[in-house]
Image (cartoon, rainbow over the protein chains, first blue to last red):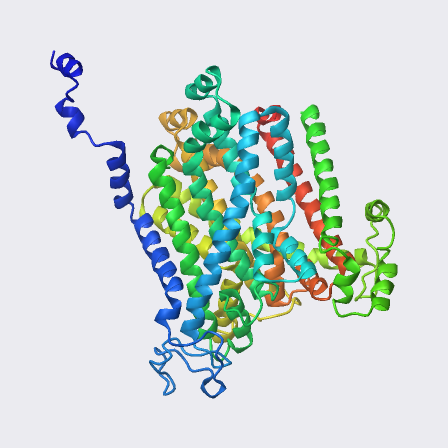
Length: 306
Length: 305
């Protein structure tokens, strides 16, 4: 009886008020997922340091002081170690901490840009294949298969060496190469959503295809998109580092972490910190992005947790 | 099964053909490949000579068909810098990369399958958490940095293994670990998920109910089914490794296909570059074809696709 009267008067029952809303449930899941919190915190710290690099560091990342070259970081028991250069200086006397901070800008810029380019390509063809199926799906599947059969690192290196490498070229080459996971995931996510009742209802009342794609499909595949986006951002950052390490990515004197490792390669037997510092930085950045992605997957799709 | 095999073979051929078209166009993306080889500052006569030498003055369709027809006969032209047929160089170097890839995948499987099985048998246990940590760390570690770190510790500080070269088996230990470690997480996750799923199935419950020992249930009944997807993933990962070994081979100076690729990229040796990309892609296509056919043979439900 109580339920009936409540429904009639529009006053919510006690259970309804006390039951947590989906939004607060999501919030609770987020704050109970330590991987998500830790990953997000590390990533936020790296982004903040990259943005504040000119204010944090009194040095210029390109400024060479040959008189102060190869100063070890402060944790080294060396008389040369100084708080003026907490992470030391490289073989050209450039402050290592400053180069590390500016290098974060490069990694993040490349990661985000390549992720956006590949995301637009992969999502577009994946959603189209998933929604239309049939011949469209066949063609898209074929394109994905072809792309997967080509070795990414090798093709990227070859293309960059032919065009000539620069930051823009690296971003575009990576963006045009790594869209495969976006396409695969978006295709299957759209296939699952397409057969649901609300899509059939939208089709029945005569909604246009763009409207169905953008207002009905898009919100329901967005959580998958975010997860793939984080994975591909990490992937792009690792690829850029590998390209720069091989000398065909970002060109000197730009401070890229992969390039810093490459430049220090010959000195690593005497000054191993020269490769461990940018290496740890790369590792932490990629780790934090992956943890964030894994966490977002767990939080947005709790039923898929294994 | 035959219809499936024929259809799958047709797709593989079409993919290989498309890849050949892309590989061919690759050297034309900058506009004039002759300028790309000779350099922006070269004199017009030099550029013209390069254009004649490579046959870039012919119509593009003729160039493609000629290149494809030669490639089908196993003739990839002459390397500009090595002064010998590209095909000879590739065949000389391919076994080295294959051996490296095989060692790397063996290392990955030896690490990933036991860890994955243990993690699945005791979900959320200490072993499971350790396996998850290995996976998360492995995916975030830049391959080349991991390789350099191995060189530093195993090669320089502890003097256990040689640092560069490809003379003996010892030279392949570090590269195989560095290359294999990167694919370990994916194989481990798949093993764990597969075993978890199979262990909760009805026939395992029956096997347990009739009193079989847990070890027999796990190894004789569960693992056999759980391992099928791992086999095909390993084939695919092996293909990825052949392409990815360029970084590792460059660091350890292993005389394989990856190092050859890097050398030819450095010297703008276009015929060699094209041939390597094409042959690695074709090998990958063959590997996935083999994996698909093997899967369809083992699991008849997959034959409808």
